[in-house]
Amino acid sequence: MNFLDLLRALFALAFTLGIIGLAAWAARRYAPQLMARLSAERGPRRMQIVETLVLDPARRLVLVRIDNEERLLVLGEGHELIEPRVGK
Image (cartoon, rainbow, N blue to C red; front, side, top):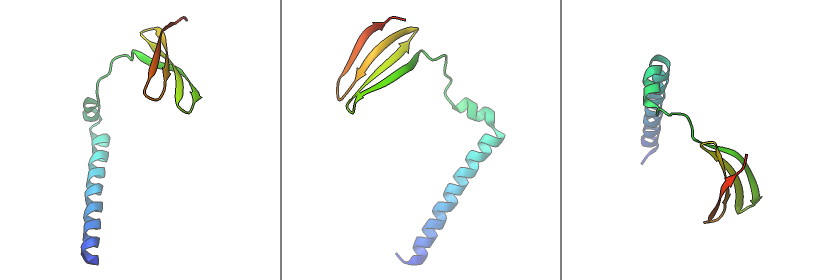
């Protein structure tokens, strides 16, 4: 492969990426309803991370709220401990 072949491949790559970027810009600019339809419709969120605490480099304590009920999780290397409920 000589220098001209490499230069031609780089220009083709730049041209292709430019066309993809131009199409994305045009879709956001001129068809926002199309972009909204392509994104997933989500209802209200049921799960939320309330707080996290790093215990050591291998373990983390996470307080999660699921349907107005809080759960305490201990996440580590290959094992998880789930406490049933945490009072509010």
